[in-house]
Amino acid sequence: MAKTVLAVDDSASIRQMVSFTLKSAGYEVVEAADGQEGLDKAKTRAFNLVLTDQNMPRMDGLTLIKSLRGMANYRSVPILMLTTESSDAMKSQGRAAGATGWLVKPFDPNKLIEVVKKVIG
Image (cartoon, rainbow, N blue to C red; front, side, top):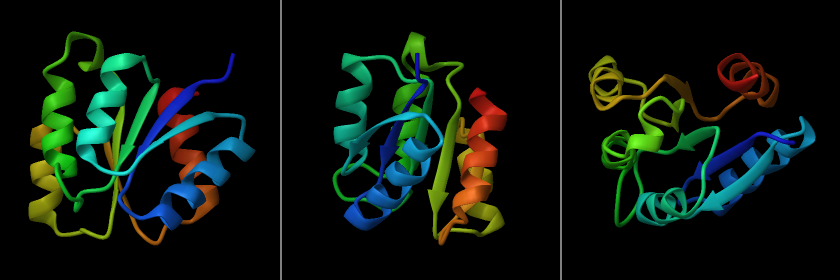
């Protein structure tokens, strides 16, 4: 059974690129257009990994991570930030919120697959 990834990004083209990349590696991908939609989808089913952008309307990535970490079934699920934000201060905030790792856009598809395999197999 394929492992499932929740890809949260307000950019349709980034969601499509992430989805195409991960599906080609055998993962099932569910897309969400912002943090609120991602949180709503996370409440309805289980995911093996959450991949989220930081800057989104309605709910940003850090708020999404904090919300997910407050849910019993997402306390240990890996959450990766995939964002243009690369400052040490932002990464520190991500770690404090509960992010498992950090990837900077634009992403290398092979690197994305490598990191996803490392965290969920």
